[in-house]
Every structure is written in C-alpha cells, then in structure tokens.
Length: 353
Image (tube, rainbow, N blue to C red):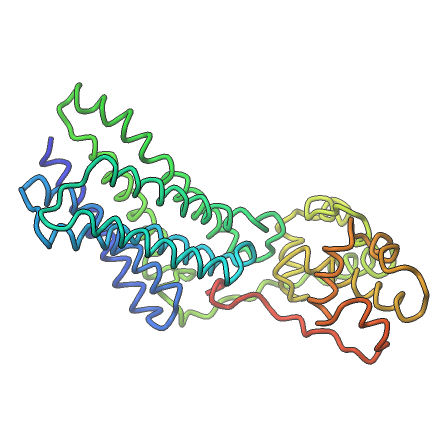
C-alpha cells in the first residue's frame, strides 16, 4: 500500500509541475501567476516530506523541504488577498505576512537537522495554517454576492472549494486515515496525496490548451457579449426614474426580479456596458450623486441625506462619498458643484484574463 501512496504522490507532483510550467509560460509577468506557482511548489514539497522521512532522510534536505512546505499558507493568503481585495488592508496584510514568517522561522529553528518534529511543532504549524486559511476564506467570501465579474465569481467558487477541503483535510486524514491503516494497512497520508492529485488534475483538465476560454491561450480573442438594448433601457428607467437604488438592502436578486431578468444577465448588464465590477459600487455611485445634488442645493443635515438616498448609517455613506468624490460630504458642501467624480474603471483585467 505504501507503493500506491508514493505513486499517487508522484502523480500529484507531476500535475503541480504542469500547472507551474504552463502558468509561467502564459503569465510569467503576472504576480498572481507567480503566487500560484509558489503555492504549487510548496504543495509539492508537502508531498515529498513523508517519502523522505520513510526512507530515513533527516538532514538538511528534509529541513529545506519542510521549510518550503510551510510557505503554502502564505501563498494562499497572498493569492486570495490579491484576487479578492477589500477585506484586509495593506497594513493588516503586511503585519500578517511578517508575523507568519517570524513564527515559521522560529519553529524551523527548533527542528534543525537531524529533523525530528515533535507533536508540539506539528500542532503549531497546523494552528498557523488554520489561521491563514480562515483569513483567506474570509477574503474569498467578502463581496461574493455583489461581485459582478463572472470569471472572478468562478475563481471565488474554486477557491472556496479548495480552501474548505484544505481546512477539513487534517480531520479527514485523522479519521479516515486511521480506518484505512487498520483495515487495509494503507498509510493515512494516502488521503492527502489523493486530494491534492485530484485538485491539480481537475485544474489542468479545465484549462487544457485548445479550449477557446483557456488561460493558457491568452492571445485568443474573446467574444464580447451582445448588449440587450431593451433590457439596458429598462434598467436605466428603474435607476433614473424610479430610483430603486435608494431602497435600503437592495440586492442583485431583488433588482433582477424587478427587471425581469436572471441574476447572471443583470450582472452582465452592469459589468459590461456600465463598467462596474461591484454591485454596491453601482448603487452607491447613484446614491452619492443624488446626495451631492442635495448637499449643494439644500440645507438638510448630512445624516438625513444619507438615509434618504439609501444608506443605513453615516459611516458607510461617508466612505462611499469619499470613494466617488475623494472628499467628505462636509467638504463637498463647502466647495460646491465644482468637484468632479472619480472616474469609474472597468474590472481588473488580470482577474478577467
């Protein structure tokens, strides 16, 4: 059974190597591609630890492989925060990365060759991996419902599945691995290798060369969706005349029902012709535009204006207003209508690639 375990690990490593090679060939200058490659390399290192230990390796080679393996959580965190920004700010991200590296180096210094990990050090690594995994999962889940970029929504789903499997892996390995060992004499680590092999294989199969939508074919022209002019006019009517954006708690689902289209069609309308990649940004821009006119042409209190245009409190109104006009509502009222809106940009092209 150990031969089967080694075979599965070898197959998984070959799939991870394929991801690295194809990713770097297609997107060698893309930061996300490099982070994905780093994650695959650290995953391959994880798969090598058990075979090396089985054959008696306890020197610097094993220590080096373990050191690379420990960086998998860091690559996952960095990749998730770059693909799905907004939850963890730059300061939190830098502090998290620095703290993680310091803690990892501290633990690695306790298992210098001959490498002999104790339950304490293994548990410490597991806790750090769990913490980074949960932070990454939180970044994935934030703004999922209001994300209008379909390719990024698919990436969120893939990340969610992989992270959930990764977080559940220790418990699955502990329970199922014990059963495998006592029933078939198979090592519990067989499950680790099989899960990684499956994830890597599915990734490669879903991005084969020759598919028109494959990321390994960046030069393939992408067909632009046909804009439904009638639906776009109906949406404009709901926005400009009925001002549905003032409804507190309005969701993609709610607006799609009002418009009589699917959620996918609504996201395509707002993301494509209108250029918004976030549903809340779409609503807030209209709310803030109304608020700007009310600030200049009336003497209502700022809090009352915030409530009237659809915000539930003053803090999110101030943030949204500053995001559009780069100044606070009070400053805007003093300066008047000479302040210009911040230009609305299309969705991140790296995510859409």
